[in-house]
Length: 219
Image (tube, rainbow, N blue to C red; front, side, top):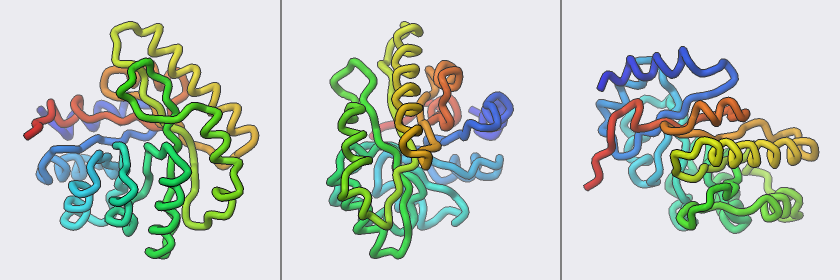
């Protein structure tokens, strides 16, 4: 697996307005450095402890994205450095992120995760709940957290039409929200298997792991 070749392939293929988040979970630092040396600066992890360990040893100009489900009691570990949290699915979690960001004297950007897939296993909230969060007094008072967009994961299926309709649905929710909240600029959707459809449907950020780094090894 030539990581730098793969990074180059995606950078050449993706439109200028779409950012590549290289999902480096379970991968060793050597692999991450190969991606880094190929010019990749955005890395995504799904476990806070692993991301923190990597942050401590790798170059400081890497933008770390937390793409997995976040437990509130672990937010404090990533608050000093995380650039973007993709999977915020409650006001309680936003409050915790705001609190920990404030302790670190920074502002943390977040995406609200909208559930668009049919599978029960995917986390997320519906668009009504997301709207309530954005319009809540509690959120408006938060000074150290900023929701800058939405994230969603399509159903894991070979049915491209279903995937396309889920992504289109999320894009329409995003457009509707943006009329009211112009600060929403990012739409994170699309992974190794469906990123092309996601880009067609208006994604600004794709999360690609196995097609860059090879299959994951889980212990």
